[in-house]
Image 1 (cartoon, rainbow, N blue to C red):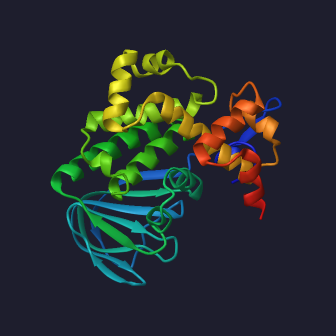
Image 2 (tube, helix red, strand yellow; image 1 turned 60 degrees about the vertical axis):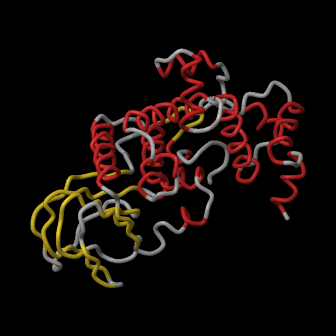
Length: 288
């Protein structure tokens, strides 16, 4: 993690002491294309970015890797490691070829600290989805393709991709029971939260961004995420606090200001309640 902000630090320029102006030149860090037709193993699929996924809607034949040949089955999703060429031998009636940068994957890993997430692309693996989950997956991919084509900013795409990976890999069990509309609403909330969590604490602000009343938003968050807005904001702030304490050169006072605390003592109190230790103790442990 580069010092001082978030996973997109390498694409930004500083505007003041703490403010950052995000600059996204023609760098989208993600490639998503529908894929169909007859394929022969002599020709490899081209991927721009290292993290690769093959989503089979309808197909027959094999995905051919150095480690062996794997059957193409309807509703099968492959998580493909960076090493090795990807070749198909058979017919893909419909599917998707997705590749994305390690930078986008890092946002997913920040939200999923369990080993399954870290190991997702270490070796080739696959997951078979039932028809209901497959339908949601294809709808999410179609929407993601539209967002990419519209050149939505990378912080939004990162949230979308993180939700998609959590859903397809089965790491976010609560997502499986949600409707497609619920999934889209969760995505919208995550994108708004990611943009404003340092400055905005008001339920009214987030409710307006979601097009809901404050009461409806809190009920929605409790139903789909099992947490109130206050807890979700606090969790996000504390996650960023840990990142900054571990991977930046900012002082504790500066980190408190970056995260919207008026006083360092308030930041330390909140951190101790969340982590069970003071900011100073956490910093000392991270050094040792």
